[in-house]
Image 1 (tube, rainbow, N blue to C red):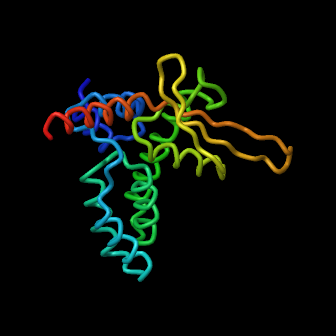
Image 2 (image 1 turned 90 degrees about the vertical axis):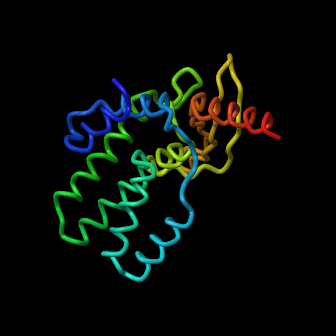
Amino acid sequence: MKYRKILEIAKHSPEKVDFTKLRLSFAESEEYIPCIPDIDLAKKLERFLKDGDIKKASEVIKKILDNYYLDINAHVIADFIFDELNDKGKSYFHRTFAKGLIDSILDSGDGKTFETAYKVIDIREEYVILETMGILANHQEFVEWQGHKYDVFEEFDPATGMIKYIHFNIDIPKKWLDEYEIRKSLLN
């Protein structure tokens, strides 16, 4: 099923959608562009939230989601905004959508090894997962292993005194970025 069709279903009934299919269909679509947040909108949103202007924040979050509907952080913020506006239906919707996206990533592996790395379609997803897990990584490294690309985060666990590694398979966004660089160099 194509991305737009799955997305339309998800916008009406997020609890009935396979979020892995949604994410992967997006990555295979012509619309796919990883890692391109709208900085101006993000700054506006931050300002309105800081000022407590929740109504204007709701308008901006809608624009952010129009630009990139699979932005997990935007759905988390939308959940907060609509909860503040006492719109429990929209709050629940965005919470469900964010949870579906997060669960899709968590279900893709356990992050403990290269073989069981979490599969992401956008580098920002890595940071959402780390935050969700309460991990404060103190080091990140890009690694190529057996033909695949990974971001590996290192976390020191003060409880055990051990270092843990969290692996993310970044084949999808890395392939797009590599192809983008090739296209860009051909134009210059």
